[in-house]
Image (tube, rainbow, N blue to C red; front, side, top):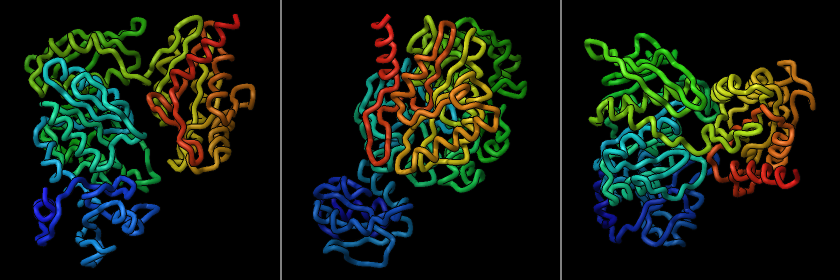
Amino acid sequence: MTLRVLLEEALGVIRNLQGTVTGIAQDSRKVKRGFVFVARSGIKMDGHGFVETAAKQGAIAIVGERNEREMAGLPYIQVNNAKAAVAQLAAAFYMHPASRFINFGVTGTDGKTTTSFILHYLLNQHFKTALMSTAAIRVGSQNLELEGHFTTPEAPEVQALLAKFRDNACSHAVLETSSHGFAQHRLDEISYHVGIWTNLTPEHLDFHESFEAYRDAKLELMRRSKIAILNRDDPNFNYFASAANSVISYGLSDRADWQAKYIRAVGDRQLFSLYINRHSPQERFEVMLPMVGNYNIHNALAAMAAAHQAGISIPELIRGIQSFPGVAGRMQVVQSEPFKVIVDFAHTPPALEKALDTLRPITPGKLIVLIGAAGERDPIKRPMLGKISQTHADIAIFTEEDSRSENLVTILIDLANGAIHAGGNATQTYWTIPDRRKAIQLAIKLAKPGDTVLLAGKGHERTLERGYETLVWDEVAEAQAVLDTLKSTV
């Protein structure tokens, strides 16, 4: 695509500029010859400080919000909103790939990834379906490489992925969507057929600054979806329903359109009766879900209700869900006997509480939890994590979890203070171990037959951000290595 055509199509800017565009970037390190560089102003840095670097690496034009005609010897195109311009340029460059799919968006504080995986699994049994989530990028059943910890990549990466989905003949796409993604315009230029909302509790307030702003960012998915699938049991239901064009609800409430009743736990499975209250007369179906935890019933209901909108019958959905293989890093069992070791992504107070409450009834012995808290993120939740660890587990081990540039000792003190205020005692009911590998070793060595060890917070993630380093990390492999060492010494 020529620069002149791209600017006119994406931004409505008419300038007779020459050159062939080969890509869009807002990170100067990703600029290659023929790229358009968008100089965004971020929280910490201004992209205009990297214009010279972008020019040296081969950029052919600069886009930004300043009143300039030229910068670093390159044409400069002024826009009102550089963040929005990134998405507009990327979508036009990749020829608007999102328009080729039936798009399903999934948002919420907790449960997004599991719901996205279940929905992708159900859809992919009938249509070639793409998945963009925190834990995996998939085309059909094929996994693609996943970078970083972002639920929603930046706009150029989003549009590049969508183009890859299109080029691989996908007809449906499941897109896990974050509040950051909407607030920072990463998801602009995407329309949704179905939008799913799982739940809402305070999170990312360091970025959004208020719960109301965080909620409003999530509401954007409802505004942009033809059909909204909403959690009837969450106290924020009315806010999301008022923003939606058409609502289908799910939950345990008698007012839910898709309702689960008579829940029975059988080992690592759950049985429940599904009532479709939208139908007259009311219909009832029996469902077997191969997952533990009531919260996973909510996730399954949301996914089933959404997949039904793609034309999949309820009996087909029930058959599909009973073979769902689970999600890596979500209640993933590393060892069952003589004590359980489980890896889970739970990193928010509600998610940690739900995970521990799920494991308590199936733990005859002690419940041991390992948890950290991310640096530069939501310090208000750290004492809450410490308190929940103390009150819902028998032993808590506080450790690192992507401390980034923040002092790890400060984070550990915040966690420990929450435990202390809940009656905890150091080296009796809780430990602080800065090194996560050593913390995992201690958690497993403390376990006795009948106990459960929950390694929380990292889940599927493949890196650990320590200071200014990014280390390769695999929580399941770390746990397995400790278990293998213990077995070899017996």
